[in-house]
Image (cartoon, rainbow, N blue to C red):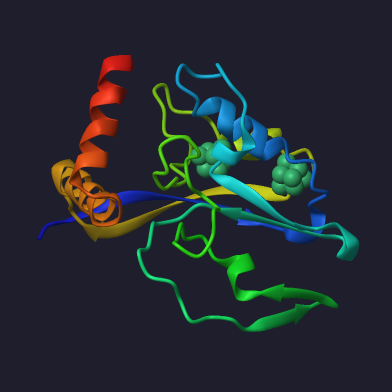
Amino acid sequence: MAKIKKKVKTIKIDADKCNGCRGCEIVCSGFHANPQWSSINPARSRIQIITDRLNNKWLPVFAGEYTPAECMGRSIYVIDGKEYNECDFCRASCPSRVLFVEPDSGLPLKCDMCESDPTLKEPKCVEVCLNDVLVYEEREEEVEEQTSMELVETGLASMINKYGFDKVAETITRMSQKS
Ligand code: SF4
Ligand code: SF4
């Protein structure tokens, strides 16, 4: 397969600076509402703040890939005197928890780095975070070329695997009627 240059976008997280204001969750849900900004619902956000107020703990986590399997990781980590379990750091939408699941459709949510046209200077959650917890970075990497149809098929296959063909088809039909 041919190699191509690809822009890789990342967001670095400095969790010690997070005060749990949840501005990032609010702006992410509004930006991805349909129509855009028509509703605010942090449950739809692709970034979630894992919160333990009594221990002064706020940990921003971005939604990654959906996985149909529950993992075996149950380790506890102590970092700077704060306790974290393995799920705290996990980005997956998985059957073990309700995180990163679209509340109406039940479909998994995934951070898309606020891909839009025109392209944003930086993702919305980074823009709104006044404490510099989230720092946006771009770099170029050489990767194997993947056609857009291959990407679409990979995404659809994972959703059909979890929700079944009928539910995915019903959701796509509903979305196409709105657009
Ligand atoms: S906007 Fe920044 S400070 Fe506020 S919850 Fe999100 S990451 Fe934390
Ligand atoms: S980068 Fe965009 S899609 Fe991802 S969590 Fe931030 S606001 Fe949401």
